[in-house]
Length: 191
Length: 191
DNA sequence: GCGCGAGGCTTAGAAAATCTCAGTCTACCG
DNA sequence: CGGTAGACTGAGATTTTCTAAGCCTCGCGC
Image (cartoon, rainbow over all chains, first blue to last red; front, top):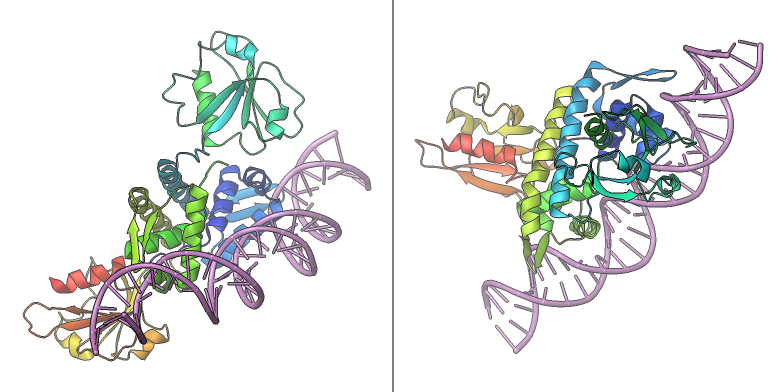
């Protein structure tokens, strides 16, 4: 009564789909099927009485309303996530666990990213490994590899390190490549 | 994955219970049973791995963690509610519908609260009526009455109008008496 | 001291919400 | 033209949330 807003599940689905402009990618990030995301967003739109997306055969476009809603919803989620982490540090779930190929580690500042204040909010732990299987088994969220790898449906982004000709590869589970943590890590490496 | 926080339902239950320091009052506000609130909060605490309340035989006390969490959760809900209202004005549900006894209206500034900028965020509509039944039938959220009335389980707060000896009575559905809208209305009348 | 009422706790089952699966549709590309 | 990608939809499975009823402790009044 005091607060009126639709189901958080619907908002989660909307927010992820809006970021990716794709129900499929949002589904991968949320760990559900694309059908579930589609139904959730549709339910949300019906409860609000507006359209949030224009559907294309191969993806989505935000409506003006959707474009207005997205940053606010993201902001509220940030507040909740920060508050939740503050009271329940054990959760710490928003930070990525990152595997670093030893070959890559040699080309990075010693001990990176241990002393990086800017990456501390985004990286929970690092491990020295290049085993892609750890991503599939959910033991790692992301990997920094020295070479392209046969990675199935994993996302891969090439990063050019300064002072080096050969790129390194940032590999994540589907849907994680464009989240804030991943972007922050890539930006830090671009510098 | 990008965002980690517990179910909104649990957070809703926590936030209302923390404001009221009572599962029973929170249940009335949320329109569910006290058992449901109790279960939701317990599930939330288990998922976070912390206690948010100390239970007393006749109510609740916030733990330090609970006290830290509450304002942040309220803030996130405000953001979501404001954003939802902005994109879906038809919802407008956060504003109260207020009935005003004609006898009371005579003692208020002419047309109150029509031109009140400060109350605009809190009052959706007003009707000239003193029929308490409209609250029970969910047609009104609150009433301003000239006299105490037999109101069963409704909440009633006396308000002293300036320049007047006899108080008026602000009556709401159980659980709504201390919400922000109600408080704002009462404060405006106290002036 | 006893009885009553208030309010939190718990359980079992009902009801509602959410998910999966499988198939349909449209658009794009080779 | 055929294949692929991705959004849409419906039925049923699964999970979450709710209700009702009873239990417990505490405080108050007689």
